Amino acid sequence: MLILKPNCECCDTDLPPEAEDARICSFECTFCADCAETQLQNTCPNCGGHFVPRPIRPAAKLISHPASTERFTKSHIPCAPSPA
View 1 (cartoon, rainbow, N blue to C red):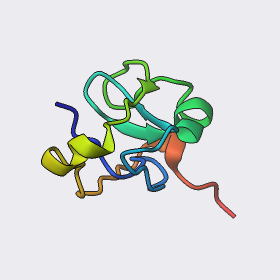
View 2: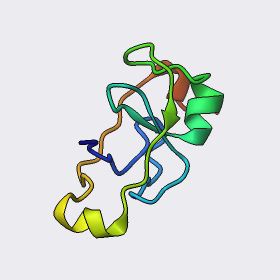
View 3: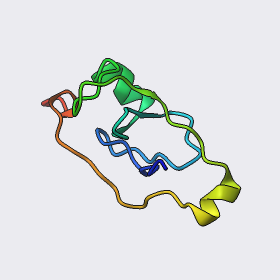
View 4: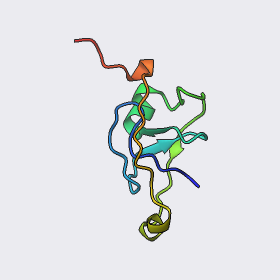
C-alpha cells in the first residue's frame, strides 16, 4: 500500500492525500508536479526512475489506511535555492 507522503521532497510543499499535483516514482519518492517537471525533468534524483501522478486514496479508505504525517525533504542539487 502506498505511504502517501505529505510533502514534496524538494520544496516541502504540502501534498495532502487528495492532491492532484503529487508525483511519485516506483520507490514512492514524492514530489510536487512543479518540481518533478521543472527542477527534475521527470527523473527521480534518488533512483533515476520516472514520475507518475500519485493515486488519490478515497476519503473513506483514509479512515482505516491514513496517509503518512512524517515529512521528508532531501538536499538535491536541482532543488537548491538560487543564490541571491
